[in-house]
Image (cartoon, rainbow over all chains, first blue to last red):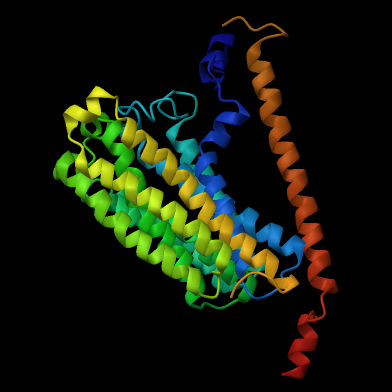
Length: 314
Length: 54
């Protein structure tokens, strides 16, 4: 074997991936949301958990979420190359091979499910496995490119972490974790549709049937308002459940008033208004949506943290 | 592609190897801690004791 053949078979590349590129496959920003909501689900549960077990539960739920992200990037590499928002991801940027993302995603999926089941209980592990399956197969491979309700359905996958956190602590289910599920589930569509309004051509170019493409931008604005009204009813109503309390109620009333106002403004605007100020209201609504979810789950966390001291809750 | 000792490729490979090493080390520590917590908890029983009770 000559030197030339050694070089030809070598995998050395000038743009070889760094550790950070593999980490980026796990969608760290989405993972931070998963960590936070799973942590709240775990602590809001009426059962104490050993700190090491709690840490393991949140860690393996986060790794499961990251594995879903890697599998999503493997499958969606073709459309990620087209969209401005995603073309710098590791696969379209040429830093990581699609097959590597698949291997990493599958390995971390198996590891996270097995370790969560061993650290907590089998039901929690089974729910994590279902969540990964739902996000990768049902949403990414099947519905994302087929229906304009893709975001609504995809929102379900992102809403599971607090339920898994609760099950990890209790080993069973009740109404409260499903209220946290519903909160994230109903929040996702207005959050993403606002993004779709100001990332104008991205989804058109990629051929993803986003509501803005299939039903038009006017209809998307109305959808945002309708979902925000339903979300407000659900979010404020949660204040009167086992995970709510006066602090949550105060936060929820203020945030939902602001969110409804933002959705109302978006519904009243047309494309000329929006282009004139570079989608100021839509961008503002998107930023507010991030704060909205963080504060709602933060308030649930505060209520749960105060309960041992005789405060928190009703 | 001329590679010298200082090439950026080496730094990236070193970073990757170091990252994987640290992750594996952390995983071992985590499994050890988890095992300690499980076996020292009140509800812990050895499998044969569970079988004997059945």
